[in-house]
Amino acid sequence: ALKTIILIGGPMKGTRFRPLSLDLPKPLFPVAGFPVIYHHIEAASKVPNMKEIILIGFYQAQEDLTKFIINVQHEFKIQVRYLQEYTSLGTAGGIYHFRDQILMGNPEYFFVMNSDVCGDFPLVEMLEFHKHRPAGTFCTILGTEATRQQSLNYGCLAENKDTSEVLHYVEKPETFISTTINCGIYLCSPCIFEPLKRIFKQNLEENYNFDFNTPNKEVIRMEQDIFVPLASTGKLYVFHTTRFWSQIKSAGAVIYANRHYLELYRDTHPDRLAKNGEGKPKVIGDVFIHSSAQVHPTAVLGPNVSIGKNVMIGDGVRVRDSIILEGAMLQDHCCILNSIIGWNSTVGMWSRVEGTPNDPNPNKPFAKLETLSMFDDHGKLNPSITVIGSNVQVPPEVIILNSMVLPHKELSGCCKNQIIM
Ligand code: GTP
Picture 1 (cartoon, rainbow, N blue to C red):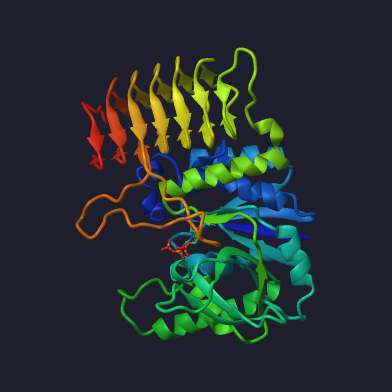
Picture 2 (tube, rainbow, N blue to C red):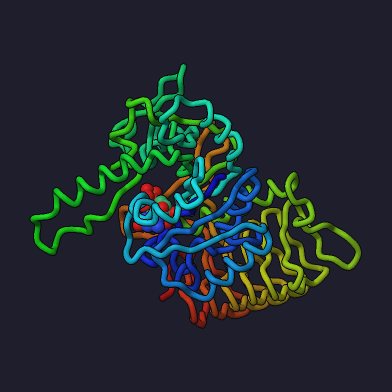
């Protein structure tokens, strides 16, 4: 049997995702019509012999998460559970802490998936690859190519090209190591608990005599504490993918992920994509419209648009490269480009809400999404997608450009490159 562990983090994570993560844990944010981790669960449930999916995080049990779990269990007919860390234990600490639960039923292998990545995950192929590694292999890491410059923002690994063994692993290196980066998707054998246990004990012993101010000694980081020392011991391998993969750290990344998941639907779920037809809005390219949304037939949507539950879209509205969240209202003739419109927000007639994408440079092979910091060196907001938080009122006939609006605001006029708090 197999299991999958999805690391969902907790309320202190996903800060770059504000204001959207103020209303909903980031792993539940809808991309292409479904929560971020729904896509992970769907991919995992397709692997033959998958027995259980375990979410590990430090969110308090809450209604949204509980509902989500009930729904996916039902839909994918697979056991899904949430195990809550009492505090942030790091990317491997929770796995060690819940080892008995993970090992229950003697799984042969288990996947570990970071929740803040998206992609067309080649899980079945990884499994096949991992099975053919030498006995005693701890882990296979999914790797992909990045540009030299962008690689520095990721975990980088150097390998033996003949055997795919990881020879060297550095998390966010200061100088160039390799263009192969860690995708945050692993396949582990249960023997990985040997090094986990060793590191756990070592941390405890090292910290035993320190005062109570020392950081939590139960924190184990998969990357720095496990992969770094395991490199070149013959226990760690890399499996390469050239399929779509991206991190989801910022709101801008969600628009990018939305485009790619919608594109995948063409093959996997054509039924999820909106079609043109009599009495329906005009659809350009890949668009998801929730069945409960009301869209005026004169509206024009797409490409790369997701429309949530109970959204209302008026006469002549134009939406492109955007996500419109549950309960939002787009009044007649407004225009939404490269933006996210928050839950239950309203955009007034003839208004224009527009952002700037940070998409990868299409002329650079292997380029990933740019992860710009929020502000430039002069303290000005870097142009990015526009995010309207929940329950915001955008009045008629204004322009909102490259801005971020926190929840429950009533805007009074135009704004450009601003954070409205
Ligand atoms: P940042 O650039 O700081 O975000 O670091 P990173 O890209 O290395 O990401 P990080 O390792 O912090 O997180 C990877 C994934 O693990 C994310 O999906 C997080 O939500 C999750 N994660 C991080 N820390 C914890 C933790 O303490 N417990 C759990 N359960 N998950 C975590």
